[in-house]
Every structure is written in structure tokens, then in C-alpha cells.
Length: 93
Ligand SMILES: [Zn+2]
Image 1: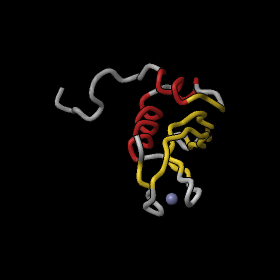
Image 2: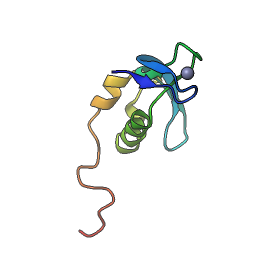
Image 3: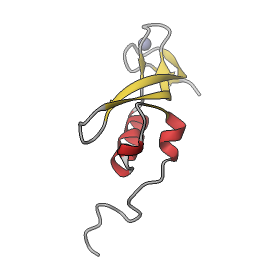
């Protein structure tokens, strides 16, 4: 699957890279290895799509971040069971 580079508009490729992410409580940052990324060979930009950013932020918000090491693989992060089973934003019950 090919992508269009958000920066220069040319064709970009799906790759993986390491990103540094601050935890939602701001206590520390972790490195997430092998995170899906888009790399553009024309302008040299590597970045995460909105979908991946949202996935990481949702996951960090819903898991016990104290159990996450300084470095974690993207797949391992996504495999951590979420603490909240019910819809967090449903206040009707
Ligand atoms: Zn580009």
C-alpha cells in the first residue's frame, strides 16, 4: 500500500521506526520500537499517521503505564490489556 507524503506530496512508503512518547501523566517518556511509520525517500521525512498516533495515545491512556519499560515494541504495547472494560465516556450507567 502506498501513501502520499504529507510534507512534499510525493509517494511515500510504509516503514517502521522508533518514536519517543511522553506518557499521559507526563511522568516520563518511553521509546516505542518498530512503530508503523511513513517514510518519504524524496524529502527524507519519517512520520506517524494520525491513526497510529491515536492508537498509541488511546492505548497509553487505557493501560497501566507503570508496567511499561523504558523501551517497548509497538506490538507489545498494543498487546497490553486495557484497564477499563466499559466505555470510559459513557456516564449514563
Ligand atoms: Zn516527502
